[in-house]
Length: 345
Image (cartoon, rainbow, N blue to C red; front, top):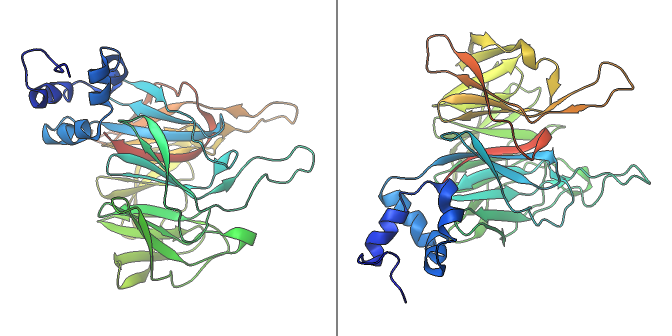
């Protein structure tokens, strides 16, 4: 077998390849079969960790087109398109999405596709399927299914393990079940249930290393202090609206303003009035900034089309006066954002 780089041991050559930015990896794979095998190996991921060359990417999935994900590289302001998620569910939506161990995980959800002849939603109301995308091998693979099918649920990573809780299962039944997934063993285990359910879905945030489960319209927040001991319930008068966590602090967009939520006090950060007409967007903390991505603008007149957006607006928080800027728009995805998370490669 030929050496990766003439005159160098393969271990040293691999460390050289690990310093090449991720966006150039497809080009490296064209050099030779040995280079292709190297850049698509799990060993490269480990070496990138050793030499501290991992990069952070933003992962986004929108309603249009179906089951497609894109990665955003903030250092180069460019987007990549991933292979289509091979789910059996058309227009998969209301799923959980997280990343851990260098892989993107898409869990559960239901179909947002509508049968034109009947007006009914296509497929099952909730699925328990789990998919993992390996960015090094550049492919999706199925993983162990969740114990309980669910959609519109809370999903977070705690200590490199995935925790899911609550949501809606088959027959539109609200559930309080919770479970935890070990990605190394590919095994799910049940953990204590939430203390109560609510007649809507829920979402999850990690604040201070603890998972917080928030139900829209409720002040009661479930907090996972310890997986074995289960959940505690805390009352919070948080402002309603999309939430994002940046450097351990929570920010909320409410009534055209972004607030920093400090315990029970909301501190005004900046105006966000331009987003009042936009719905279905994602708001996420990414590195040191807040990203507002995609969404739709409803028509002012009945005979106008809904405007599907691919815009990406970024709020830089590091300065004394936070300022908005526009990042490169998504190149393929547009419209309502179905999932958004950060991936380190």
